[in-house]
Image: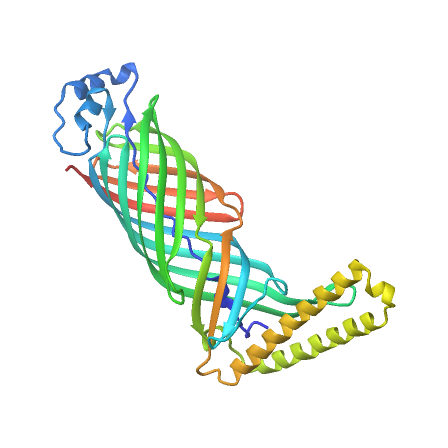
Length: 373
């Protein structure tokens, strides 16, 4: 079964989750009185952020107003696939929701991106995203059909791991404020990821609230920041595309498996017909029996049509294509975050963050350089 990779283009999924983690820190406490007094009396030397001088005079310590970071991101998450349509050689597409069941659908991605940013206001950081992404989606699923009593049986199983490369670009902003010696940041971004086999880039929206605190080290301008937060991703659900049949079907026994599927569908159809023909007219008028009969016939017809389409495509496998449309969503929209950053000085920062809980895991690390504008 592993050799047959039929329709596993349907699991193309990526949410490139990049984000900002910069903050405005409110300096408080008696031990920091000298720093506070210095901020209030010093002249702010940069054009950005707007109102930067007023913010420093109120005791806020601002990072340099511009920066660029290089980020590495990895994630693994379970996804849900609905409203699945598959067709061959630009022919009719068949809705397979009734007969295809996914035992597992796991998407993973790793990406490297560059994120330039500026502080537009002391409380608002704005940034861009540009990067490369590698994705893979592992699927384990089967084709199911019912019998006369509407008991469903798996007649065909399949598994596949599809890999894709692409580019991503996006925009984001982070409202932030210093609170009682710490900070609160509400990071948001929208990104488009252009992958092989997709008609148009996949769109995602990320929201990540975080709250943290900075601990100064003995070295001037050096500190460690820790934070906790949450992470939510929303995907634009509709995905359409086309791939070569050779990219999703492999193995010399593909035709034999299709032929075996025809036999099993025919056996189920005979059993359903025999059951229905054996009912009395009163029993046939029973809405429960009618629903069972209609459901079984519809599923068996879909399975037969789908196998026929595959059979035809296999006859010209060298030039055949597979078209698909689906709606997908993360199994869990939210997960929990823990992160930390080491600031060597106000120019260089190194950070890492890990997300967990639910069916999504993620890891991010980045190196950032900041400068004044």
